[in-house]
Length: 344
Image (cartoon, rainbow, N blue to C red):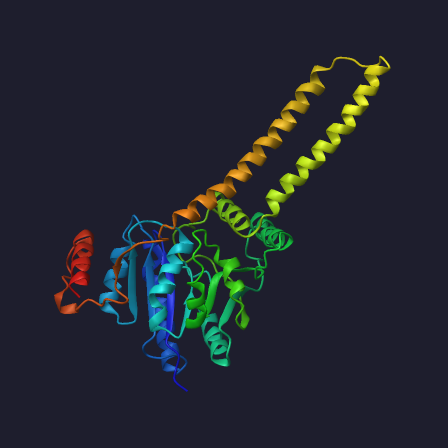
């Protein structure tokens, strides 16, 4: 049996503090797997620069020149983690048998990659990296994260519990993923829809190597809301249900107050009037906002704009080392890379 060609896809956004250590650890891991005859010597590590504003691309570029196992892909602007991950998967698909996606901070255990590849060799086409526990998280993060998975399950979205974007996919699975042409890509929900033979590998999540998280509370909430509205129409149905209940309640109270008026027991009440107006007004604004969110997603889908634009591709267009000026500054290196890529 031929050894599988593995590509490790690492989306990066402003990761200069952690990138050198990440490169060192992933390089050692890949070399170990090659030595153990678990993967082919043709295997690669592909760093995807998602429009970073620091020296992330410069570090990727230099690492690719010094190490044959390291490749880089530079996007023209920041397009978000999910799209950057897709860019890496699609760029490496044709040259790989299986692909593993992992975040640059390496909080996900790279030792689990060995077991993922073994599962692939056994015949599984999708292998999910699943956290065995959340004991290391704060109470707030643990409560909100687990609440999100439970809420998505109640809404009819089947996610892998405690799984993020640490997973292995076969080339065939990535090829099927490429058929999903929607603009709002929520991979944690889309990948299970592919339906191929899958398995899970459990691991303990570690502390971030360096730098700061790129997913603060605001982004986490936005990500969760995007996942809900991308996969379920239940929220908009709940709004309709609230509207129907409000209508029924208003009819009951209307008949009640009419009876009071007929019997002469009614009194003018400013408080009840203004409260009801504010309540109904608030519900209407919430409903309009939710409907607008869905309409906005439809609008984006109809545009059919590309999810990302590749600026420099060092994976499919290798640069001759003898032509590269290793002493150039960051911007000079990037410009030189682009020109050499175009010439190739």
